Image (cartoon, rainbow, N blue to C red; front, side, top):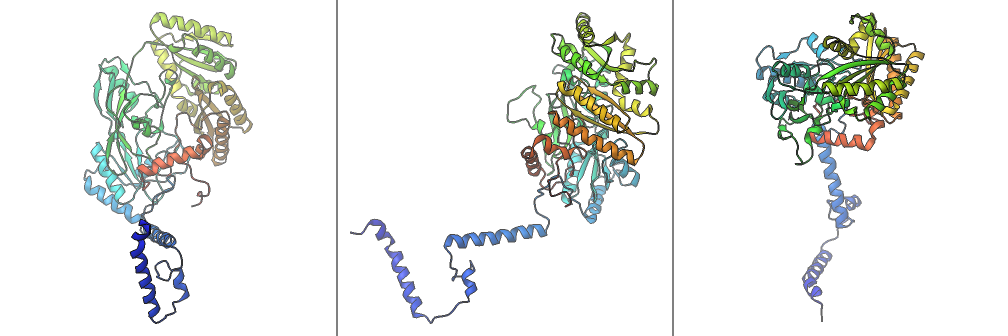
Length: 558
């Protein structure tokens, strides 16, 4: 008997036999040999699977070629510039003028385009923008992004202009600079919940002054350079002098943010609840993204109680002695009452004296500035510990500021270190850079750096958030020849920090200036993950291109 499978296949076998007999009865024709290699030919010699595979390959090549011809290909290099056409840029500007007829909204004069595309304290390659726009609301930003995307014109966010690594530099071929500084409103202050919602152009100093003026005993503790805005602080993942006590932007100080994405959609990353375990933290996705994933328009900030503070300082024979004292102080039971510990090297103290900003000169030695917080009794107890540890490690002249005015002056001199350095060295320009290492490695890093700068006859000052292992080198130069020497010194400094298990930037961000070091620090797989996120959110690469993401090896000249 036949198996059931054989019975079922019998009709197909008979049909095949009939086709064979019919083919034998036809006149024979000789097909060209080349048709036996054509997957669309009936004379194709390969299997059905091979035929399908070859057809799929050909179709794929046609699709990719067509996409390339029309400029539809995915941007596989988020670190490269899109280079928009001049026509597209001009058309986009005209559409912006129609969408925003207010004459103060858009600027295209040469001076504005240059000013918004460069910084007098940054020495990285720059290009002027094609236009500067000044939105007032999230809705305005959405319109701008939609026009930019329509014509494939890059957009670059701008607000406080305090960044130092080329973050807001223009893009070759033309870019639209979005000046967020006019979006500076405080929208809501929730005193019982200790939070505040504001637009991203608000400055941290103005926020704290507003709270103080209103008699609200709360403050926002992140304190980067003077003039920094909330949007820029989010973009660079900032910190400041308070980081040793309150942490950085990557802590929980940004509860929620509102962001305009490259496709024009608006997302709010979280509710106002103080904590949440609903999904992954999309707020953190944009912290440190430097405007390459979207434009932050609003933020809800967590506030902290204002705690009374006292300011003190002590001098040390070396940076190593100062850091040893800091480590012992911070690990003591009174360490939590230290709000700030700042290191100013002997050159910095000399510059402060020479700049003429102080009523009486400071001792010219490596110096620690302390800010101790708590009630009067706790400040006294903590001060005893700080003084004893300082003395143990060679510290001298430990003293408190004698008044609030003197305390403000001392802290202002620290915050305006760059201005003091420049004022004390007329005729010089200054390159400012920062790195960060584990605190125990900071003395080695500082001493090796000072030795290196001295060997190359470079003037410099050093200030640092010594409790975090983060320090800033302010290196002076007079001409382009010295500028090249400074650039080489910065390169050596960064690699020195990386060799000590540190980072190329503790708080300035990556921008243009530090992106070449990111692969060495994070590894290629981590950097590629960042590129994957960038491509997913911004597939046409219009959001601040050329920043943050390292150029792949082999793509440098493309």
